[in-house]
Length: 129
Length: 343
View 1 (cartoon, chains in turn purple, cyan):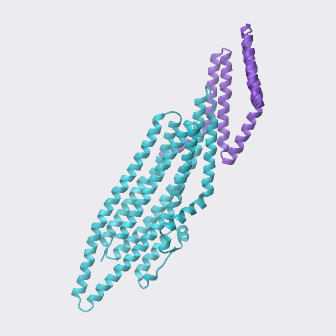
View 2: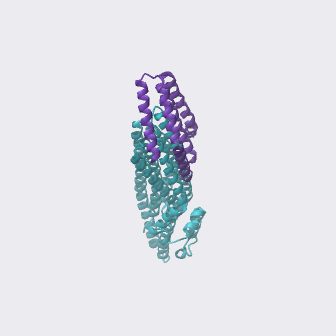
View 3: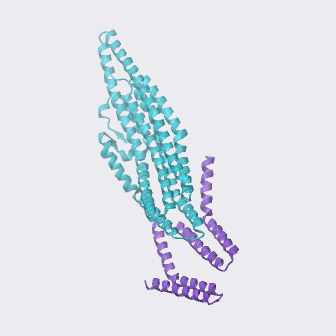
């Protein structure tokens, strides 16, 4: 609970500070937002590893370790590329932001590709009888 | 499998039929049934078989349940993600989870297919024996109709039912994947495919059984008339021994009817024992998928609920095709048991 309050408080403080700096005409407010992002991630690092560990434990008990790894990878990639693309957009780099989204999609496709191949093989074997 | 033969002593020919029938029973089923008598069939025996399926398949079902539960948890976890890549992530999660769960369902559908193949093999081996008994008892016409009907059934099942079992299940899975990633129409299409196949199999089995029942009834009455005429001719035209020939024919017909019932009921028991385990497994798998669908619905994971709904439709088709095919075989056996000469 303390962590939650700390993160929420840090978010508000950073947002207010970034707003005031922008109002004062400081052009480095975006960098300040990035600093905020890094702060949140550092706060969450422990919690994230705990979630990962618990999911891993439950998945191994349920016999879904293989797909758990892939699904967590997909979720992770979507978050990382989503955030990176937002940061680029914040810096005004729209092209780079779109490119990152495209790369993220390709990364996700690469993770899901073996399953797509499996389906295609099964369909081919059905058609060929 | 051992059939009690007290009532059949002295009738060498009928004993031969029973012995031939015992040879056709698969060893695994024969050992489970033990000695064939009135108690080996009926509701308590079937209930016992269902309970034994629970104990035999308990670990397999438990593992499938945990697998589905784990997949539901992962899908729920994935649905928390948001942002620009959410749709791509959703599609990938549907593909990964779908293929993994479907591989288990496909294994079940293959097992059902192979069980169906085993039942058809048994039916192929057993029908000549039962038609032989019917013909031996003076029911030549009924035996011919029964044999022709059995051949037609085996032909239809070999050509359509076995390919449908795997093909249709895969088609519904493919539609399920499409519907889960957004194509709403595919859900309705999967439902319609399910309804169409269920309707088609129901119609085909009704037509097949009605035609067989009609043919059997006509052949049976002509056989009865023929045997009655022979009996009358024997008693009336042959002096002194005519009466004993006629009563010997009556005894023969009665013992043949008994053997026919014993072999017919034995065959139905073997078919039921063979199919009960996969059928109960399908129904329990379906229950687990329904529970998963409900959980995903409750958690608001729409794409997951649609995926599991399509899996449920696939199992519905599997259960319907399997159960109706087995029903046709059982009713056909019962018709053949009832056919032949009746004095």
